Length: 307
Image 1: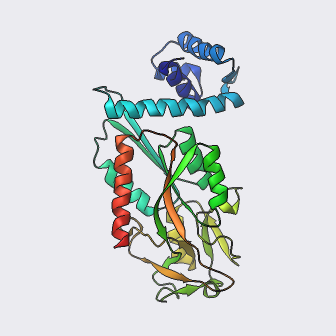
Image 2 (image 1 turned 60 degrees about the horizontal axis):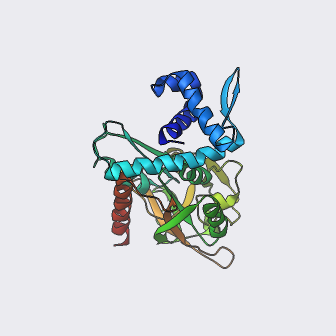
Image 3 (image 1 turned 90 degrees about the vertical axis):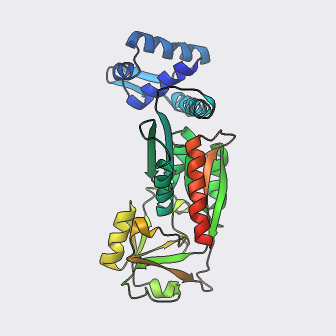
């Protein structure tokens, strides 16, 4: 098996068509088919189902693709760090829970590189998608948080996907709301004070509440509205006096100055909790230059928060 063959298999899986993939990869379709067949024979597996309607990955093909992506991403990172010349575009991707500081750091990182030479991607998405993107090599880095509530469950997922979690900052819980909200000027806000207002949470699909992006999800909230993006959250904070529970690390440059983060006030029935925000990587990876630069920007941003 060669790196070129891995590139072909990854390309076909992403494009979903042998004919279109052969054009994109600058190889004849018979040669592409033969290259895939050689790998299947070498490992005695079937990577793709072939039918009149096209091709799709088999279950063992999906598993094989995870390893193929890991190998090829590491090859790309090694070439970026130590290789000479080359005209192909380098790739760098980040998947993150909905953190404005993660986006702001991405913006600052991109400014340091020539975008003609790179293909950048940032994906604000569900918790499980963050984990899946990093484990399959779609993203080099994933940003998410751990707490006493979700640590054991997510820790098992990290281990089963050969991921390692590196902490960045530990935060108390804050209530994030519109500056004209009735509670916006409070020094702290208790769970009892929030009962008449809708709690805004990012939709995790059919996943367990252990995967929620908001802290203190084990509490019982009388009113809940699920959203899929930060912009909708902000609109509902204005229109419905909604709120969300967060780290208190807010980038006003991206979210605007019309919102405030007020400390959450714990009580006996609704205790506080710490958010340990960090990043996940594949174990034993060689970070790309862009990956190193991105983490440098995040750490720089969070260092200002601690001041």
